[in-house]
Image (cartoon, rainbow, N blue to C red; front, side, top):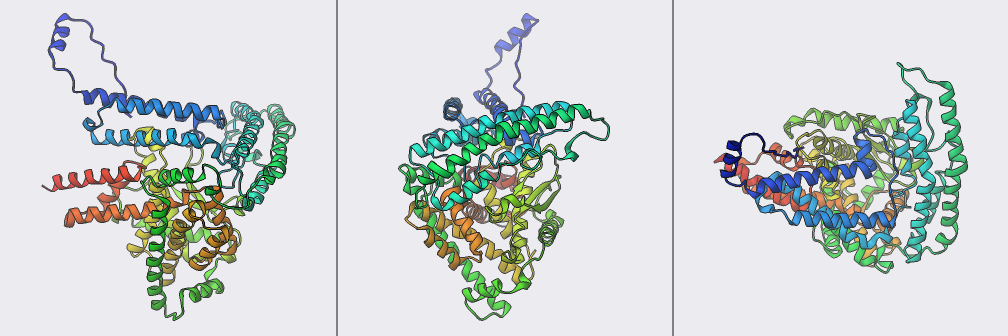
Length: 594
């Protein structure tokens, strides 16, 4: 990170005279320093307010997130000051890396100010977005090894009742303007929230004995007993009553107001909000109609490729008949979570062994797979990746290990590439391990870029010949056609009149997902995280388009390793900014060749 230096002219009059005679420094220096100062300020603000940033840096979480309208309003106002400060800079005179910082900050500030109008459409109840269930990660990552850490833990636990009441007030505010979770997703909302109510030693606030103390320090048993007693009191007398109040409201007045339809278009500002989300998550100026058309096109292309593989295998039936063959053949299904873990890690490690063929550098942080918390498995289709934290140096893909008879292993290689290497783990750690980037840039998460890179990584494994057996190649397309379906279903249910049952039938016709997975995924798109699922294939498609452009422009001078470095080294970028960055990189490659 570039420090901001203050130049103090002192001592000799001669030195003052010489300095006065020098030409004024070009404005770009002052602009670059102002931009660096803003980057530092934004990062300090993130460390103060952002739980994920603190967990990543290994800092104790001292305050729970502020969900209030007043806080969101203050953030929007601050974002406007950021835009004003950026507008005062001459971005055309900045060095390229500084321009990337300028462009990223500008885009983030713009979407924050634009998105504030939709504050009361914030969804903090559904499985992927639950502000209550999300407390688990905070408290399970919190340090409790020392008396000081335990005191911080109790202070944070004491904030939970107020935080839960804020969740309830937000839900009540949502309901007042008519924004209530659809009836189809209400059982998951209530079940997940009620599932957080437990005794202190059994729920998400539990502190295992292994987390207490260390080998080189004695534990004061009296202090530890007092800690556990206060933890029990807080959970029993304050936390659980607040959660019970929230659940009671959700089960009564809130549930009674739940609409029968799905998607954002059923709400007053829903159509405008969804169109904002499409731009937000894709970081492209596209409409729901355009996204759906792309989805239909991609599904058709993938079915053609899948038919070719079916012929290679020697299967003479249709897409539907081969799907039935897969779904009814036990040999295609893992029998234990340990087998899933092994298959994922073996695939990612095999790609890592060939990393030098495709990348300039490799991540230092180790990676692995582990089973998702079983309490979360019923509401999630696959799982998610967790980057390393200050307390745990390993990046993990948390996979869904339930109902294995419905989860064919033939797509696990593609999943391993997407989630671990060279997908999310590599892409994220490539940035976090780079000391040259401003910290505020490192912490950027852009769905289309991040998930687009994950899906591109799956394609790269296929292109690189990492998958030799045709059935696993077919598994790649099973995963990819599942993601392509999202481009039809997400805009379909949220803006273009598709019903929940029509969406589920479309998934039955065009994916290999079980009824359980179809149920959770369709609700994810329509009421849980509208728009977010578009980032995967829209991002991958844009990356492929950018790569094809670079290959056409550079011809024989195109180097895939250097292209990947150019894509990854700046960190997560909006796709429009990435396009401009690669155009700049192409010119640099040409200049170097000349």
